[in-house]
Length: 424
Image 1 (cartoon, rainbow, N blue to C red):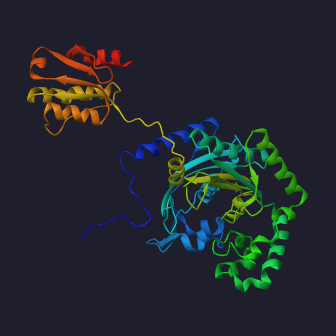
Image 2 (image 1 turned 180 degrees about the vertical axis):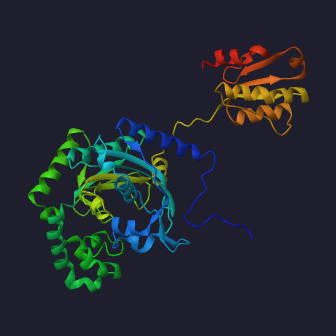
């Protein structure tokens, strides 16, 4: 019986993986411009981290986590998102004591959620995210959003929509919570069991329900914007003003609440308006999480961040028909005729690679015509042909596949001449 890949996962094969590499390099480049440094955390963490950090009323914690016990009967969970782990590391490694503040970090790696696989959504997916921890300045909210928008635009996406909201501070959320309970409680029996369970624990989560999104009470639910205190209003107004200063267009949506419990103040999503992208239009989501460091045992340290899956970015690039500039050629392909010439190219190939060139040769004992076809398939810029006669004369023929020009070169000076001809 054949063994197949687990449902909700994928193999990323040569020819496709180059897209991922380009995306990862672009993300790193932009983070360098914005002065965010990479952090790498474990793929699994203690389950308690996500219960306390993500929130036990979220779909992620209630339904989607891959949790298991190790041999020491400790409950561990494959990370479903990146923020909680980064904040845990921030607290555990006492980054709050570093001289340069705020701490600006980015991460990239696989995340795991047990949910229904669909286009652009997997049970193992690769997430890229940034976190800025240690500042309550609304300007850094704008900076984090600007970083995300800069990345998407430089990747070539044009049909983008930024949606923002304020979830307010603790006082504002408390007032809004009471209003939501009063609004939904008389008819909560008409909602799904998840919404019923969340009514008292975290009624704002009801607004994010997928099953009951068309219920009439959803449309008339109290808006968080009507319950913001003066500090929260001022904060949100500043974020909007800074985004305007950065020429970043946005739409305010009071129903945007995000899917995790730790958000406060600014929440945002970047969506794709590309035709054919799919029913789920969100590319990226994030927001501010003041209080999260305290929730997992650290000192007060306000933070903000975002995350997106590379899978959904690739789907958006496909929907907009964006062609990525992928490196799909090699510098030199060695064609050998005769056993002695083939033996010689083993060492010559390594010399090319040691000189910094991408190079290859035939390993299937193919005829000369088939070797040239192989060179074409890998888009070789040059083909170097070595036969028995050339080997005796200590020469090799180099052909430019672009111009067709051929040059006879002394074998002893081949590497130096190739460096000269290639412009490296």
